[in-house]
Image (cartoon, rainbow, N blue to C red):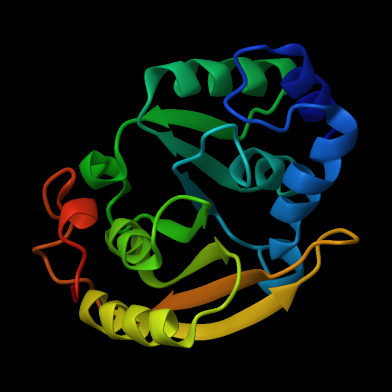
Length: 210
């Protein structure tokens, strides 16, 4: 894990405002690994981190779960290049960079046991990105901040359309002083309708249920 943090600090192109290793150990690393407290990932084969950015939580989970294959899905070439360097510098062999938008990742359809997303988009959008990528019975873990009952009700309705069901919303404290951190956990209970994913950009422009 140290190699990831020091690599982050030493690369001026790192796509994050928190690159100092002493701060990133909490803000990035601990926040990523808190998922292990909420969902049993010990026997998971395939994980997809959508909108991977600087590699969190996907890169940290790849190190913690060496038997898993982790796909770091990122659409921006600059960020993909950083992720390639980060994987090489840290010697992470079970993570691969997939430089494509989530909606266009056809090879990922129905192939992932777990999809993770951190600070990516409004939850209805994340649900639409993730659902087609999960296999039946698979799990979505979505990192969120302060809770909103109205938002959660709306997300629950969207999830039903996509074949997902909310399993729990867990308040977590990955590091001292962390406020309003929640993991929203969904399970894929029926196959996602074949009309998903919609065309690139449609999920953000016309979110389901709006």
